[in-house]
Image (cartoon, rainbow, N blue to C red):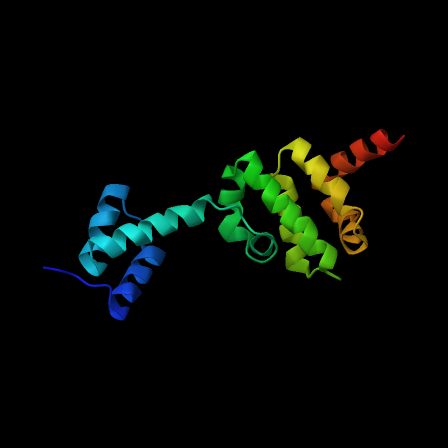
Length: 154
């Protein structure tokens, strides 16, 4: 039976993606049975490409829980893209909401020490962000980095 990617079929694929995890070999068969083989191949290729893209600043600040695992798994070059976008985004931001502050701290805490150092060094130059980073409640993540920056400045 030849399947076609109808609106209803895409809705079913979307529902399955949200609620089920299939082994890779079975995933292709299930989706091909719903939307057709060509559409399933294209869709799964697109999904793989999306997973390999660096996490965006918007995702870090507003959707940390869903991207945390990806952040931990990013290569250094991908992490650099995320960090640079985050710095640029925060330079344009006047203030952060409480959840965004916590997400930023979570992101900083997820970085290896050398990257954490570089990011915090860039962020303390942004007044709205520097005010966040010096709060006592974030000492566990930021203190050692700020201490290292202070030693470097001396």
